[in-house]
Image (cartoon, rainbow, N blue to C red):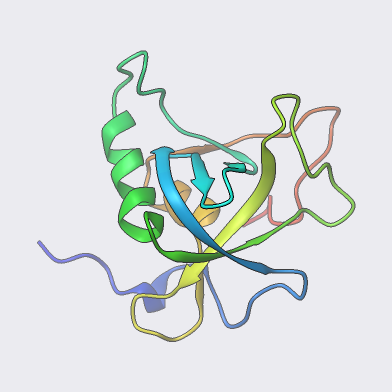
Length: 135
């Protein structure tokens, strides 16, 4: 079975957000959390993946999705415009971007993992909606 072409994905964007910062990933913890080589932890914004500790269904698949695209690789991170940049654990709340598989544009991991079925989108609270909620 072959994966669908990335060209059909709504998670592929032609360019990075203007505030995107390039970083190197040291480790992928699970589907929605990773660590940069400077030891800062990143929590993918606006999504929730199954918990590995609790052995929830599809937790390993969600981790594999993010790990395959981010582990020990260069990524770009961007923040929700006018949104919180850190959660109460001190993790950076970010959108994570990687080059698209076909080299044409950039894949937003936050959107791609929801599209792949391994995460659900959620509201960050207080009735706020993220800028890409309607996708």
